[in-house]
Length: 203
Image 1 (tube, rainbow, N blue to C red):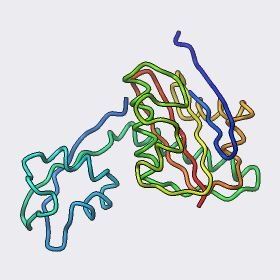
Image 2 (image 1 turned 120 degrees about the horizontal axis):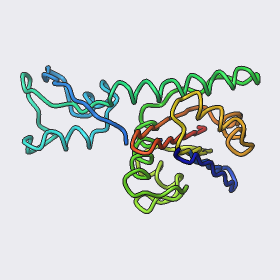
Image 3 (image 1 turned 180 degrees about the horizontal axis):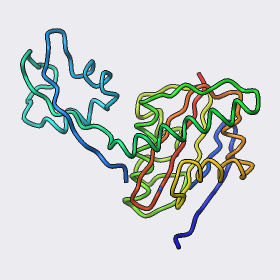
Image 4 (image 1 turned 90 degrees about the vertical axis):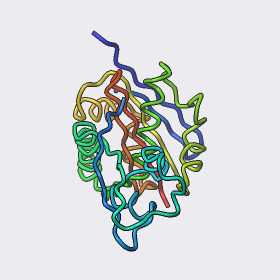
């Protein structure tokens, strides 16, 4: 039976906790007049860099033409479902404590997914990534601004309910979930090792 882990640390507004590699699929998009790579990325909630990478035959990503077909990498439905359930359960816990729901932020979920996949690929369990640095730096480097931020991470829990329950039973993680300063949330799940990352920001 795989060990289940939780780690919590806190520094100023930075509080981190640890606990599940994201699977990807793809679809095709036919470019229509007015489309840009960025507009397409936002439409499908996919990072611009992922679309560019998946379409290496496009020499200049700034020049796409109507009728052109692009490959759009998307998150596996099972992975996306788990991530959505974690957000729903998290907001349920906030509601039970008289707090407003956190807004799901797909760009933040993208960052959280990178973090979970990084932990799975490089076999570490830490708030600080050897690839991306600390969570605050990682979020900013992905172009997301904030006034307050926090991160919960976990490893080994098999379901959204199990991981949220574990976080709620740990003071440091619970504090992040119920933090009044946070307004948005992103969740990333990696099935390879069952790494979970929950990122929060307040603007």
